[in-house]
Image (cartoon, rainbow, N blue to C red; front, side):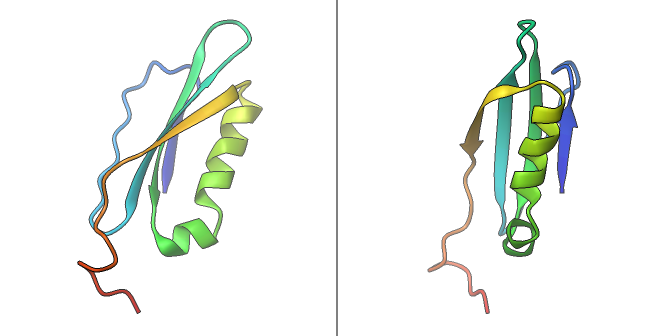
Length: 81
Protein backbone atom coordinates (compact mmCIF):
# COMPACT_ATOMS: atom_id res chain seq x y z
CA UNK A 1 0.00 0.00 0.00
CA UNK A 2 1.05 3.58 -0.52
CA UNK A 3 -0.35 7.10 -0.27
CA UNK A 4 0.72 10.15 -2.26
CA UNK A 5 0.11 13.82 -1.47
CA UNK A 6 0.29 15.55 -4.84
CA UNK A 7 1.07 18.96 -3.33
CA UNK A 8 2.66 17.85 -0.05
CA UNK A 9 -0.11 19.47 2.00
CA UNK A 10 -1.75 16.30 3.33
CA UNK A 11 -0.12 14.71 6.36
CA UNK A 12 0.76 11.09 5.61
CA UNK A 13 1.55 8.19 7.91
CA UNK A 14 2.34 4.52 7.50
CA UNK A 15 2.19 1.74 10.09
CA UNK A 16 4.10 -1.51 9.73
CA UNK A 17 4.87 -4.63 11.71
CA UNK A 18 7.29 -6.90 9.87
CA UNK A 19 7.35 -4.76 6.70
CA UNK A 20 9.43 -1.69 5.90
CA UNK A 21 8.06 1.86 6.07
CA UNK A 22 9.29 4.12 3.26
CA UNK A 23 8.87 7.91 3.13
CA UNK A 24 9.45 9.66 -0.22
CA UNK A 25 9.68 13.30 -1.27
CA UNK A 26 10.14 14.85 -4.69
CA UNK A 27 10.65 18.46 -5.72
CA UNK A 28 8.38 19.94 -8.40
CA UNK A 29 9.77 22.49 -10.91
CA UNK A 30 7.47 25.17 -9.43
CA UNK A 31 9.17 24.77 -6.04
CA UNK A 32 6.41 22.62 -4.55
CA UNK A 33 6.80 19.10 -3.29
CA UNK A 34 5.11 15.74 -3.78
CA UNK A 35 5.26 13.43 -0.77
CA UNK A 36 4.44 9.76 -0.30
CA UNK A 37 4.58 6.92 2.18
CA UNK A 38 4.64 3.22 1.38
CA UNK A 39 4.19 -0.01 3.31
CA UNK A 40 6.81 -2.17 1.62
CA UNK A 41 6.44 -5.84 2.43
CA UNK A 42 7.89 -8.70 0.44
CA UNK A 43 4.79 -9.20 -1.73
CA UNK A 44 4.28 -5.47 -2.20
CA UNK A 45 7.88 -5.02 -3.31
CA UNK A 46 7.54 -7.88 -5.80
CA UNK A 47 4.29 -6.34 -7.06
CA UNK A 48 6.00 -2.96 -7.56
CA UNK A 49 4.62 -0.80 -4.75
CA UNK A 50 7.71 1.44 -4.65
CA UNK A 51 8.14 1.70 -8.41
CA UNK A 52 4.44 2.49 -8.82
CA UNK A 53 4.58 5.11 -6.06
CA UNK A 54 7.57 6.84 -7.62
CA UNK A 55 5.87 6.73 -11.04
CA UNK A 56 2.76 8.37 -9.56
CA UNK A 57 4.94 11.04 -7.97
CA UNK A 58 6.75 11.69 -11.26
CA UNK A 59 3.44 11.96 -13.10
CA UNK A 60 2.57 14.73 -10.63
CA UNK A 61 5.75 16.57 -11.59
CA UNK A 62 8.15 15.31 -8.91
CA UNK A 63 11.82 15.12 -9.81
CA UNK A 64 14.83 14.09 -7.75
CA UNK A 65 12.78 11.74 -5.55
CA UNK A 66 14.48 10.93 -2.25
CA UNK A 67 13.46 8.02 -0.02
CA UNK A 68 14.00 7.26 3.64
CA UNK A 69 13.65 3.70 4.88
CA UNK A 70 12.30 3.37 8.40
CA UNK A 71 13.06 0.75 11.04
CA UNK A 72 11.90 -2.81 10.49
CA UNK A 73 12.33 -6.19 12.09
CA UNK A 74 15.47 -8.06 11.00
CA UNK A 75 15.51 -11.50 9.38
CA UNK A 76 17.17 -13.06 12.44
CA UNK A 77 14.34 -11.81 14.68
CA UNK A 78 11.44 -12.85 12.47
CA UNK A 79 10.94 -16.07 10.55
CA UNK A 80 9.81 -15.56 6.98
CA UNK A 81 9.11 -18.59 4.79
